[in-house]
Image (cartoon, rainbow, N blue to C red; front, top):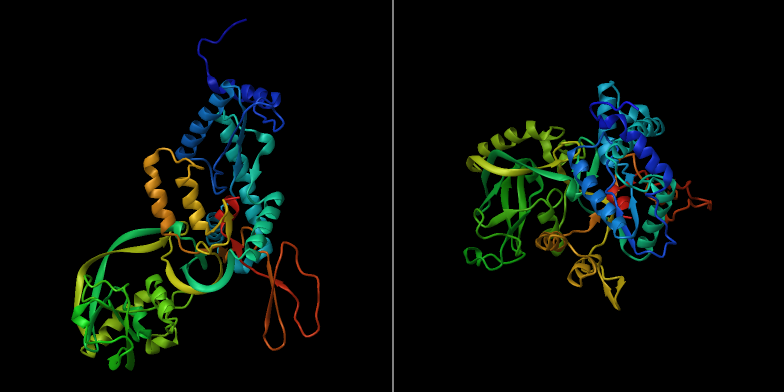
Length: 467
């Protein structure tokens, strides 16, 4: 037998891996009497191919899996791929735009058909790459986060959480992307540092500052810290009349600890529809909330002569009008602040109040070790009690900072690719709405009611991936 002078790994590795796979050496046996070792592969997104980060974690997990086998353990290393709802949706929308069309022209059914074809090819490529790395995964249990089995599980979990009081539908601030026309999660928001302008205006007897004059049309609440002695003579609930962008307004004094006495003049007006802090203040004091910017990034009728304008066009004109009224105090031309953008589509995020589905992270309804805890408290408890170990330990501090600052999680998305929200609606002739929450569609038909329609929204990818 003549041996080649140079060993070329690529000539043999695929055959060797095929033998490994055929032999079942990587297949886990749940009935085995051996000690079990299980690890799940963080499923790569089906939006392309693997990158260096994937190569790193696959290598590290392969080391762990092979070491456990050498210790005589029965090993399950579970592979899979993620349907990556918003990321895949963004890729498909860009593709359609390049073809001179959009999802609305194509329609939901055709859009999903094209997406299934795209991710199918990407999934095959990813699995080929994983095999090429020699990863000792159990391919008999490979999972895809949008397959039928997981879809049933997602629906059942949503329904259970709804009836357990952990999921609710409500009007709250969300991260709205006007470009993709969908909410995005807090963890999908990237903050980009930008140098812009900071404007100071007269507002009655006060001076207020803002980087966003276009949101100020609905300003009628002046907020100050209750312990700020500079404004001790002003009482909570006091009112005054002042000239503003489109005429006179009646403003109300609100005392709230959210106002920072050290920032600017310590006084701020609030825009509850377009800012999380302002929304929280309005919730605490039961204040009115008015929408200024629509879901396409254009100003609404409340803006008067500026109605229909995009923000970039309207901002300098609004400033000029306030200057003409003698209300512009100064402009800081070198103001550095962070702009929220969608990490997937790169569009600028516009906070909006929308009727959406949320997971309540603070409601104490979870039975845990003889107590009723909130989801946030459970996530804190499992680390403090040692049920889950974070390695290295120093990252516990980052974990607790993240958990401590969790807000109710908006899980509904206005995209077509993903697990459809298992909720149906119908209305009667008077506009009354009835909601049905179940993994199976309703079958009853009542006189005077229109047909049931399923919620058009889909669920955040992480809702399904977390299962």
